[in-house]
Length: 440
Image 1 (cartoon, rainbow, N blue to C red):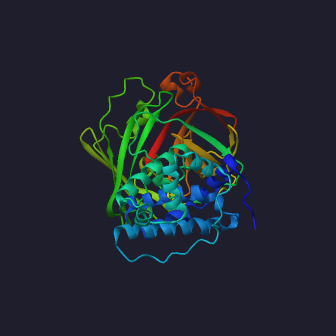
Image 2 (cartoon, one colour; image 1 turned 30 degrees about the vertical axis):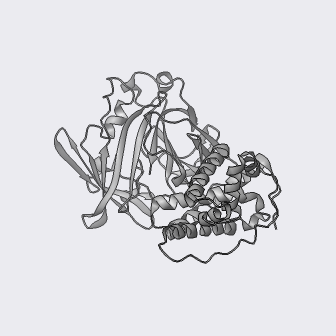
Image 3 (spheres, helix red, strand yellow; image 1 turned 90 degrees about the vertical axis):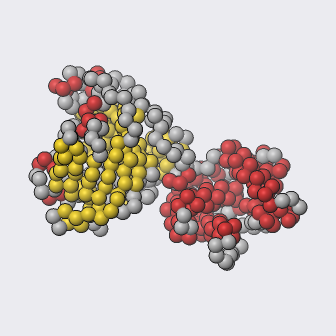
């Protein structure tokens, strides 16, 4: 048995790490039981809050996963009790939660520092597992008062003890901000996890009916949003006998046209900012995702390319021999190696995981792997893609070779963007150009 002995900030670090490691299983259980996605996210929040408060009860680290999932089952049962949708689910008392008072720990210290009324509400609800109706009866107050006080107590606790933001549903970012939020990237000593990456390269959407997202392109160093897309998979489609899905990408709210000579003109124009919409047919097999067609309007003319159109299609939309596509299962293969800002690897080879990272974006933390691509998208271009455990891109970053299209821009990128981050790829300087931020 591995005993949990750490306290204070160390206890919080241990809790966050263990929660992140089990987040996929937790999400699956809750989303399986709660059909409504928004309600499932609320239950996920409730579960994480209860686990944070009760973590110091847990004596055996090996029991963390069943303990966490047990809490989730309680919260799912609470959800259905409140809505009277179905009978109460059978509940089991968790053997890992003893009756004695809480030992010291950061969550406990936070709880103890709250006003007495907040402490009482949280302990009755989360420790004693009483329903709001039972609390109302015990305290001889209306059930509506219990609900109001419990909400206030939760908010006070969350403000003093922010939960680790490693899950999709927890983020409060509802729309793309006008400026890229601050972020930090810390490479971790832990081994990277294997991830199932089903997104379309460069467009971030999964080719599955019903999928949708919004993503934006941010200039650096200004960090301003230059273009944003709303994307949706709208139905099944077929081209030249290959089955796939139809994806529609619409440019959101027109933004002021970039000034002539702005460094972001090229990527914004290339992404079709002046088009009414992009339409794709894409396909996902058991092993790969790939584009089959791309279509947009250019100067009033409908332009359509398919995978049979050779280089004109492959140069922008194709990947792999005979457009096999991007591999779905990503595992660290060691073909691309990274030590700090120094990177080595084959140009034009397959993308590879180069490390595990704690990505802190807008004060929210994500357990990710960093996937690097050297020269597949375009010669002289390197990308970093930070994927969470669900295979979703949290942040995408582009770097240009210092001499990339120097004839067009007139100077090297280190001269054009002297304050931007640098990487050394196979001994050559690359300069950070812009970022993409997807929201689901």
